[in-house]
Length: 333
Image (tube, rainbow, N blue to C red; front, top):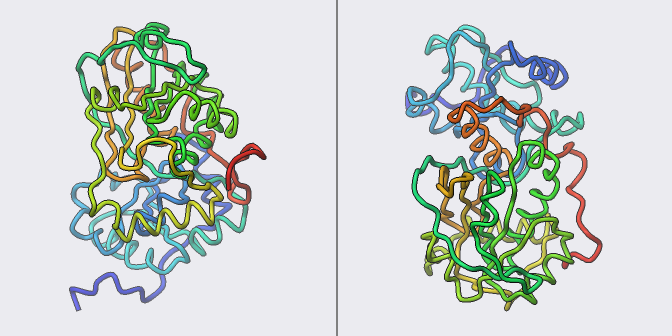
């Protein structure tokens, strides 16, 4: 039966959604949140700051996690079933204060408590000069790319093409976080693989507040080392499932002929000296950093430079679980 240690059976201590929400607002004593759902479930909707390890992988990955045995841990899943063996395992491994979320994420959502939506892709450290060149914006103007990072910390976000439903969701969520990004001193500049006319249509439809660089020949994409999808990527069941969900559930329509369908995106945090400090290169069409990932990377730049700490980037969340991000009525469906 050792192979089936993750089988959900028995009773474990629980905490209600409201109790957990109160605990998480106290930064000094907030519990660690371990989400044992699949990576896909977690990417769609999660509690901010939660660590994701699918329950079937927890035993082999437990030693590599940064969980503190001296601090409380709350295990969560969809309906408080998969979290049962997670609690049991953690207690066996010496964690002193472990419980599960009563009713799981279903109960959390029903209570209307805040969640973070969309993919998460923590950014990797880097230290290299950012490629610089003349670029064309969606309004047709030309400027040097360095003009953006000279003003301060820049998040250069490559969004594939202007008809991509994942790109449309990504930009909508970034737009929802504009106040937090501005307060943290992070400027967003988008790069798409379409023409200026296509980029301008994209800007109007989604009411995009960020500058948009148009790179139909994908010169910038290549300079920053972003890859293209292969045939296996295109027919991946997981990506097809994500595409169907973002189109039909999220309402983000797909438009063909708005840039390269095979090009993948990425994101780069560039400091005011023109150095790439953090990087994420997408491995599939749905893979991109969230606003939280960008803000956490930018906050690390402050710590390294000795700058005055900025306000927390983790407390304000993307949305309440009962509402979807607002989009322009003109957004394609």
